[in-house]
Image (cartoon, rainbow, N blue to C red):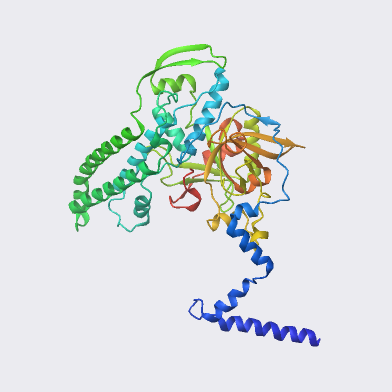
Length: 481
């Protein structure tokens, strides 16, 4: 009893000393700093860790020595693909992934050898369309104050090379496709940063000029006079936009090349035999060799535990084409998504897949496994957030798109998955990444599936549910790069 009394008194004194050390204004006082500094003991173990961290990076030191076995590379079900692509120093993973899905089907259907579509061709129109999306957005919000959240978001994100599947579906449907040799990659396509910076700067300037022209015309007018002035200046704003887009087109043509409108192409089978030599337009080429209804045949699924499941959501401004579609998705538990993914893989159909690729990925082996790194033991703290908490606190979100091509099923359950990546043949495991099923649960976010693999009850939700509109600045919906 006496010992318990002494412990209680000690605890009260300790808590009192911490409280006394606190700055009433919320800052770190000298007294509080002295208390906080006790978090580092400076014992031999701490000193050894300090020395190690001065010589090697945190991921290297956190590599889990107990997780030494290389994951088995056998998969019970795998979509056969040929070759790997490389997006180089660009944020075009969404584009490479979408086109990899299409090319795998084209290769299988027509018995082709290695083949790739021109990413550069679609990227040209992606950048032109995004420029128009921004400029038209500025015109649409012309009457809003400059510090309005939507206006601020537009100027903060005038253009980028990231994106998602609706960019593939809308752009390919509108502009068609060409083989990679018809419009090859360029230095600026492979290294987008410098071009993106200049185009973004020009667009921001153009956006200001559009708002200035509106303000000069409408000024302090109210009511009917303001409406008349707005109607009178709108054609001028549209004319200004056309001039600005001509300048953007000029920049893109210099950096990426001029997109072909007609071309001749010879198709070879996997043995090198000529199948055909014909002249095409980009649209006729797509119609003959792919022909899928990208805008009507696919469903985007999301696993976002921060929002209600079995609901349909729409993201404002989350599209690549102004007259295209905002991103529309059905939010589902991960187990439901897995069943559709398995059905697609078993039918030799690859899928657009996105995740938080940087978490617990061993880039050398190409294995994503929650046991790869033990940061808690290295740093002496615990990391206990679940998927929902990581999303809410911006600690995790979809960052990269790849092509889901394989699953390994044992005793009726998936144990691992594999994606075709776009970081080149030599990255990861032969250009792919292998994910444990536990990693899939925690860091998979989006999957695009052909409707024929989606149960009727989910399709009915997409048709009957009114989408819940989310703002463009929602942290969960940053472009995939």
